[in-house]
Amino acid sequence: MQLEQLTPVIGALARDVDLAAIDEGEFSALEDALLEHQVLFFRGQALSIDDHKALGRRFGDLHIHPSAPPGAEGHPEILKVHADAKTKRTAGDKWHSDVTCDPEPPSISILRLHTIPPSGGDTLFSSMYAAYDALSPGMRSYLEGLTAVHDGSPNYRDRARRSGFDDSARQYPNAEHPVIREHPKTGRKGIFVNPTFTTEIKGIPAAEGEAILNFLYAHVAKPQFQCRFRWEVDSIAMWDNRCVQHHAMWDYYPEVRSGYRVTVQGDRPF
Ligand code: SIN
Image 1 (cartoon, rainbow, N blue to C red):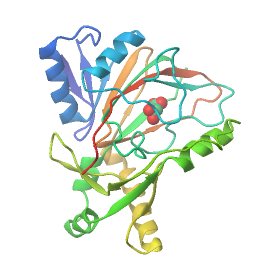
Image 2 (image 1 turned 45 degrees about the vertical axis):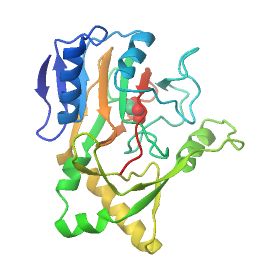
Image 3 (image 1 turned 180 degrees about the vertical axis):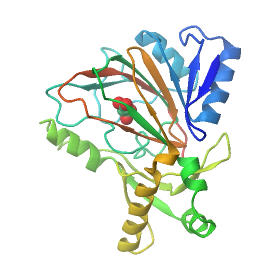
Image 4 (image 1 turned 120 degrees about the horizontal axis):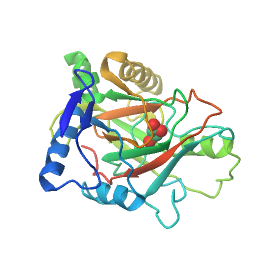
């Protein structure tokens, strides 16, 4: 596997690898590369649904999304990512890491697109390590004592409402996580709040919490912490939600963009 780094802080394009047929040694190199670069990109990977799931399972148990229906018949672990002329709101159109409203949010996500628009539809990725490292020592130690609430309801209910789907009988998960989390494998610290799921910081005045969250949302969206991926048919993006946020651009309406995501179950953040 050859790696071409996209920016000094995040992202690498991996060449000369067939994700449907990697052996133990190649998988171990891939895991190391993902820990270092936080998001990896691959071209020309026409994985079947079963191969896609098998790849995810090499990282751990697969996560089942709390709000989306199975993305493929008989495959509850597959999340369908799709937008077309009828779409009222796409998935992932604000900065987030995946499903942080879960008490044990996903670790790795693996997205393959099989249909792409003629232009646009890029995905942006931001390194939460780089964003944390850029804070002053005083701000880091203040944030390290704080806990945030993450709630699935505002995001998922908004999507359901705009899509004309009655979700009033549904319950969505919510959880409390540290504002700064440590990556269980690298030991590096990163910012772990996002505007899609985080609703408040506990134990401080509401206005102060809101100001801190707004500061952090603007901070993590700075271009110097980011890379941006231009999709091709059968490209794959594989990212580590424990240290990366992403934002899917919806600038291609009414064109079609479609694919499948496999998501790996993570652990409780600390
Ligand atoms: C997501 O997994 O949040 C969607 C990412 C994308 O569509 O690029």
